[in-house]
Image (cartoon, rainbow, N blue to C red; front, side, top):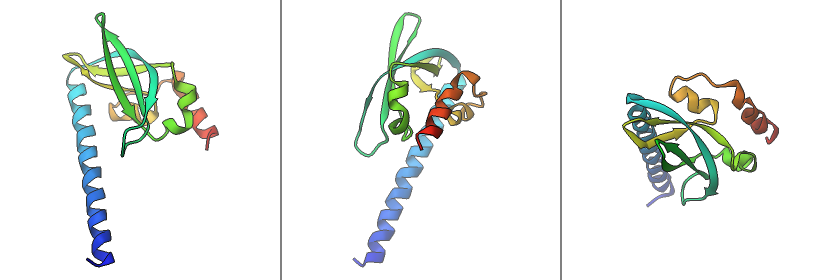
Length: 131
């Protein structure tokens, strides 16, 4: 195989992985949006998973039951130490709380057409200071 062919295959694979990830994210937003409800999540740890951004593991309670999930975002590399053990809003499907999304960044709120709260402006400030 020539170098051009190899780079074409690599580019195609990367595009395919991106599209699958984007479609999964969009489907998750749609599932949650069908019957949205809110709670407060606490980030209790971070972990790396091969091929993914740093994952923040979080938990939240619904009707006395604890649910756990993880949110991957490259920005956690910069602000992880500031958000560990902190609480943030979480949106979940009221019929299936395992389908959830923690809302930390402005872009998280925009995915669900929600206003970004003033109480989280400090997160944006920490990001801008860490550049």
